[in-house]
Structure formats: structure tokens, C-alpha cells
Amino acid sequence: MAGVRVALGRYRSMGRSLEGGAGVRGGSQGGRGPARPSPGFPTPAGIWSAARDGDEPRVLQLLERRGEPSEPDLAGYTALHYASRNGHLGVCRLLLQRGARCNARTPGGATALHRASYCGHLAVARLLLAHGADPAITDDDGRTSLHKAAECGHRDLCALLLQHSPALAGARDAKGRRPCDMAEPGLRDLLDT
Image (tube, rainbow, N blue to C red):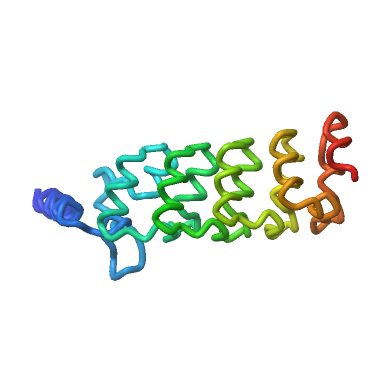
């Protein structure tokens, strides 16, 4: 029974720190990462899950509590990576307005534009490009955002990326493939220049 009281006390203490204005992470362990409640208790949602879920009011609330919009989670992904992948335009706009770095990279080298391009989120890609996203950045496999869009057959996204950076058509990944080499036949006419 004493163990349950200790665990409950930690959980309540963590809740008070969140209400009192803890940072984006919702508490910390000496600054090393998100607070981890005792097993069996729910983990408070951080900015990353709020961005992933498109919860714009929660993202705003967390940013107003001294949040850093480009802070990576333990896996190395920022809130903008999650929002971009899931097509949450409003959350992406909010994060960028609050200073999120649009060219921040994951441990695998992907940017938010890579993630939006792979998932076919044209409006998000347009927003990222308007905020200075670099479509020529390559991930650890040497792939640009155009490689990602071409691989998944996103014609409108390919056209947008080529409009911003025509030289991407000739970019080769780590295996020597151009975006047109990864595309289905119906898309190659646009990419093979």
C-alpha cells in the first residue's frame, strides 16, 4: 500500500508541475527528457502528440508555457515533423509563426518537407516552402523531398517542388536513382527532364 501512495504522490506532483507552467515536455528529469510517471499512470501529452493529433489549442497552450517549438522528442522528431506528416496545416502554421525551424532534421536526416512530401500533403508543403524550407536537403539515403513525392505518386507535389527547384529532377540518391527512376510510368513525363 505504501508503494501505491508513493506512485500516486509522484503522479499528483507531476500534474501540479504541469498546471504550474512546466515546459513543453511537461516536466523533466534534470532536463534529460519528458517526465515519466510510475507504471500504470497516464503520461501527460507533450507538444509532439498534440501536433501529431492536430490539437491546435493544446499546441498553443504548450507553446505559451515557455515552449520551444523546435525541441525534439526523445526520438529526435520535432512537433513540426509530426504535424507535417499528418497534414495538420493549422498546427504547422502555428509552429512556424512561433519560430519552428522548418529545416530541422530527424536522426535519419528527414525534414518536415520530406515528411509532408512522402504523405502527399500539398498545402503543408506549400506552407513550408513559403517559410524557407529547402527542397534540396537530402536525408541519410540521399533522397530529396522530390524523391519522396515521386516514390508515392504525388504528382501535384512533384510539380510544386520542381517549380521551386527545377534542379531536383536530376538529384540522385545514395543508390544513384533520380526521382523519375522511383516514379510510376504516369509520373515520369513530369520528372524526366
